[in-house]
Image (cartoon, rainbow, N blue to C red; front, top):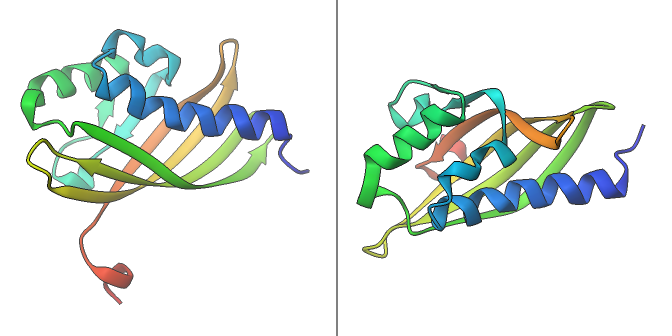
Length: 134
């Protein structure tokens, strides 16, 4: 079954909204992005997974000025798993205040609930070497 175009648009906008909310410091709106029990896996960045929107907010506040000033999401590929579950693969570009840039891949599980689509699991994979190290 193909993913409905309206759902495809809603999920892509959800992934895009992440950067807008984080970059503008609207951390009290993370429930618009994530399920209450989200697992935000940043183990590839040397940190333990964050559990729930409050943990994500706390980590962002603790990082303070170390946060990127801009998050850009691109190259979104959506694969329907079931009517209410989608695998989303996208690229993230983070720009720091000093002008340095980092790249990551986001592997997301997105689920449909009462409030619409939300990210239930996000794995952040840092891109450090070309061609995935091959």
